[in-house]
Image (cartoon, rainbow, N blue to C red; front, side, top):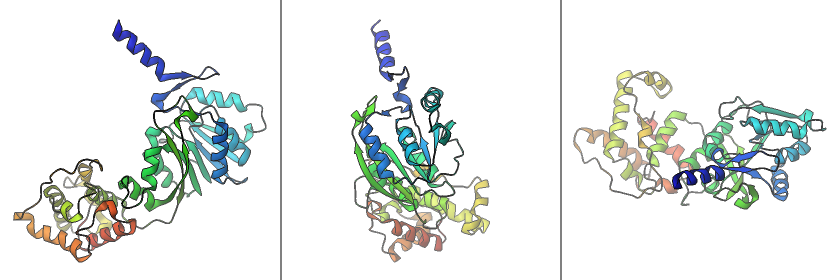
Length: 339
């Protein structure tokens, strides 16, 4: 009986009723902004123009949607919950704003997004990373996105070299966009309140550093394998050297240049750089380092790139974006590839 009671209480806590009869599900990231002053502040800091087409993700019951409609030309609201879609339709039906609201019901991660000038969103926090990169790869590029994130995620986006939260996410995001912090938002501004505080950030797409995306991804996974270790230590690891040499030999055998590496993906010799990913904040345990033997000649080739470009004693936690781009280019010049 006690077990049944606990389950019942948990189920009750998972869905908080709204005054209109709709229950919000925390498990789905449904936390609705209830503070009108905060809504006004977000809209004001968004810099919306009267001619803007605005993308809103997760409009919920429409508190922010109403202000966006008043500020811009059109709002395209993407909402996965059919109950919220119905609530939006009811709220704006018969009002002067209704003909400027387009509602798309569906999962934003699986939806082909139409053209928009600016994105303003209070999103479910569990989709923060995939949504950020979906937006940053959207074409044509938008002017900016004003997004509410979990505070720690937001701090990772804006972190600088040397900051504790500086990580692979930081570098990947800042290669594609300029990110700035706008607002701190306490948990009590939401209904139901989440367990963590939030932050609003501004993301402005910018001209990218030109890199091969797959090379870049594989390279960063290795660099942030242990972000506080020197790059010399990381690239001496047996597993890293083994993977890189395997890739090197495959490229040599197939006589591929970097632009032809897509063909290599069809072979069984493609290395799995995903295996290199580790928690950036994981304790620095002892790493297995290559001491010599069959791969020692290749190891010297790898370390020569680091030494010749003064990166051997550098740490990923302190490297700037441009330095990562430079080092990747030097590895590629030496025939060492990461995809």
